[in-house]
Image (cartoon, rainbow, N blue to C red; front, side, top):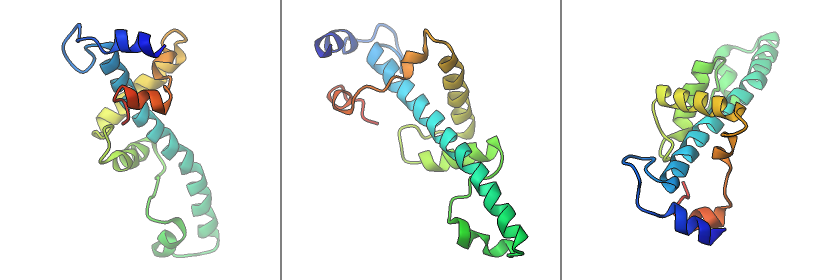
Length: 137
């Protein structure tokens, strides 16, 4: 399999741009997946955060003291808040981008994930193989 991948993925680009060959296309798909994953993780934290807020409000703890209970990263309540936090989490990584870029990647991965024929685009190759092809992001 590795020989096949070296033979077919490492060839010169057939087209120009970030997705000119299979290797470049996979690298870009990994970036889209990293953005999607960051948004999903933040969205999963939003419900527990809301529950904690409700508990603190019932205990009449002032809002100014809430950061002591929550820590630094507030996942917010909305999808837009999740995009903002994901942008902060991805800063300094190859997947960094604006909120609009992260939104577009999130929606694309979500849409493609529903298509059984294309969902394999986001299959994660083993780390050792990714390193061999320079795909570690």
